[in-house]
Image (cartoon, rainbow, N blue to C red; front, side):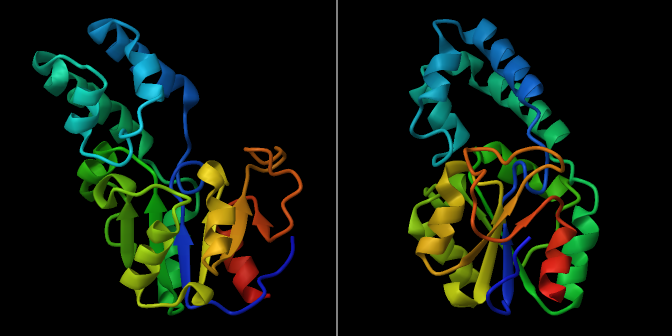
Length: 217
């Protein structure tokens, strides 16, 4: 595990497969349930949608040809799935609190549907971040440089003063580097990184508490 190249002022986190698990089987079941209601290959349309993570959920569902009379039912199904998903991994809450106790600014950048922002106040993450950037709210997705810059601006830091931690989906680590942030790869212990990042040349950790170890070096 290599060290950080400089002392940061802010630590910015991805959400899925970083702070929480992505349960692929549960996600697939939820999508099948919706597909059975909507029909006409909804799951395929949703997977190929260009707006699902950058527009209000009802707008995205309408563009995916969900009948108006089914939209609220689909929203309820999706909220149930996401409510079960928004559970911090072991050590996450304690690490975020410790980072802030040490004086670091803590940010979040997540590519997500509007469901996540709706449920956020109910979760254990409430109050743990100094800035939260939801793609569905800002209308931008990683690795668009503007989404990283928006988070840095909200934190009041320059990109060079911030570290981004994520599993590498959506080219997010390279995207962070392109705006001047340092990037840290997280992957599960004993497992190869996702997204073809076996040869990642930067710092890496196997759990969120590992961020503290990086900062102590």
